Length: 331
Image (tube, rainbow, N blue to C red):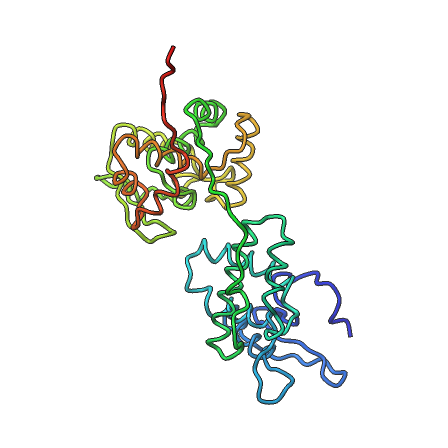
């Protein structure tokens, strides 16, 4: 029958879902015959239809299905409405959840199973994020009538320690000295504006207006205009003067001239860290340094405005544990 063999293609699809040409199908053995059911040429629609098929319980009148079916329906119906970066993160998380829980019936998952998962995962913070996504899947499963309760609720998450890393001025200079011209611009722009990685990656030449650099934040949707200062204008002018592929509108691009991918960006950052010998430094730490320094210069309100945060408590997360008091010794 062969349906249990390891996939050699279509690896990102759930069990018994295949792509033939431009169309997705559900395939299963019934009475020793392989039945192919056409789903859709649209992946999101196909996942929803796949979930409908997989979600039918063998017990008449029930529609509980497997966790894998619920995940597929969630991917088909809920994910498309989320922001692109969130979709990317959730797809990765849902794949990990499907590998562990996908075979289980929805009604069979219990709180001890969730707690056990949190305990076993060595990456404790990542485990918290994964269970948060699983909880969302169950919340929608309840709405669909596939589940009676959410076993993720009431389970205490792993304790998280807030990151306290503050990148010093000396470390920033080491990074700049080891960076090529493009990455010098990236580092300087990240510090001056406190922009997130995703927003910097997607910067286009046409976002440079007469008034300043106009950015619609990917994470929050907030529109922020970074008005021109001599320093910001100098960095952006230098970035615009970098060599780029003809016709490219990206302010920053990878070595082949195409816009950065997350993996490509992370690889370039890791190479820079190794070359500069700056330890334990995330790119996001530059944003934290920027907001911490902004708070010292102009206060919390200025830091919040620079961050584009609607709620000041979010800004506090970046600043509170990175500040330190300067004390003059007695002698």
